[in-house]
Length: 177
Image 1 (cartoon, one colour):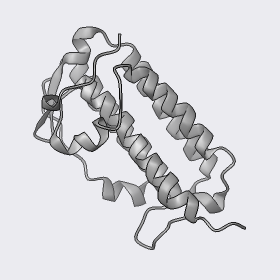
Image 2 (image 1 turned 90 degrees about the vertical axis):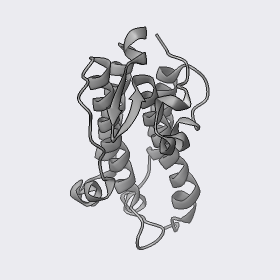
Image 3 (image 1 turned 45 degrees about the vertical axis):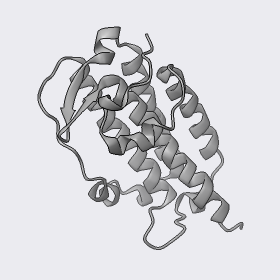
Image 4 (image 1 turned 180 degrees about the horizontal axis):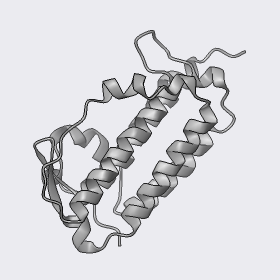
């Protein structure tokens, strides 16, 4: 069961930058396609490329990928709780402290890519298992009402947003050896 794209009343206004990136009504297929595209983008990248940041105050490629995996875990956890009927309001999270504590720059890029792939496969499994009623359930996250289907689109759009930043600002700027 794939739900239609969520309406603007199913997520916070700041999520539009993610939801708006995803066309169509087959979010599980989008998540699968994005997984293939991301793995292809990182295949054969060097550790030097993984350690690259285009400005001193910007995250490295490794940090971005860890951030995407961390955020997707949180989005999927929220979706699971709401899909299962949990009415407990859920808190927001501040991404900035997560990044240094991920220790991404101490890890090998292929390991981080595999971690992201595992997280994405788990998200695909969760979202692929939901029935029509679960997709439409809503809960409160960070003082905003979110639907399960919105969380799936947010996860996909968040990953695409960061992949585009990597393609536009990072990979073209990496000096060739």
